[in-house]
Image (tube, rainbow, N blue to C red; front, top):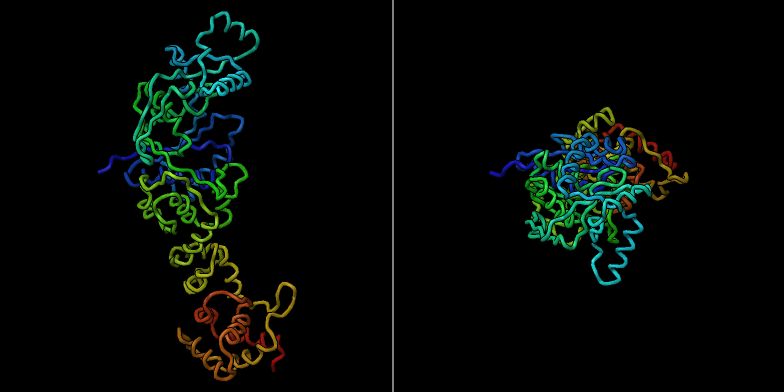
Length: 461
């Protein structure tokens, strides 16, 4: 039996999460779901200038919509005293050291190193500063930023998505853990939290691979054992551009507002860029079963937003009435099995049902947007025959076939010339649900009235 996994999803509340962030959240959720573990939602909100409570609330709502239920919610802004204590301990041990270079000075150093064909790694010049030199910088008004002194050698791990990985720490700059204003960058709070909360596996994007080598060294410095890691490929647009939290049409909040199904978003987020086909999966347990981390490809996860529309439509077309009944009742004040089963095959978004509800309940307009009639003079014979030959109740599955057969025998019309006038007269549309089912939904009395209106529009006596 698998040991329960403790995982975390750690967004910064500086914007709306997008479908790529949902990918990370879902992979973590599946580990917790399949092992009876716990999912921690941790807001990395130490960036006071950009973090917003409204974004935190939106992220929590998005996760709830996707079906992710955190066992625990934490905020880094509430744990600053803990990070301060850890940072002070590292300073005392000589593992966190003060640096006074300005951003321009650091960039000039990097440029010189690149010009000499050397990796642009920080040269640890600050470690050689004398007390007098530090005092001089302080007198200038400079405030230090603080770097973690990396140990020598490499750090390796068996990545749950990508297999064996190794990072040579000699090719990496000592990371800045504390900014000059005293605020923390991502690395130290993240490691402290993972230790304190007992996180067993960290699943995140492949852009964190180098960070992982650094973080393993920090786990060691704090006397803890690093969790397991899995780095999945990142979702990109078809042009190869990464997704962004800002101004993103694929933000989960926006997709939710536009009426997409949560399982359509989840299916696309999870399955693209894996060994599985991108297909609609109707429930979270089945999707979790298709998404072991070992199925994630090492190549890019490039996706077409049109896939989301395709998946959404497919889910709706197969959605049983029981899954839609509460929504139908809330939306229309009426939960009708026949209505749902008749129209679901024509829905791209659930909200599209409103158009067909209106067509069902109210006689359609027989003119287009410009006011031109949608029925032509040559349709008159079919409409007149349809009215005269309308079968008596009771109706069943064979009624439409029998009715149109009688109209064909009477008028000689067939194919589009037979079926299109009927569809337009009864629905006001050229496309829609199967008419054999839709006439059962309408019922005989509504059809009598609609055919009468069509005859008036055509001037048929």
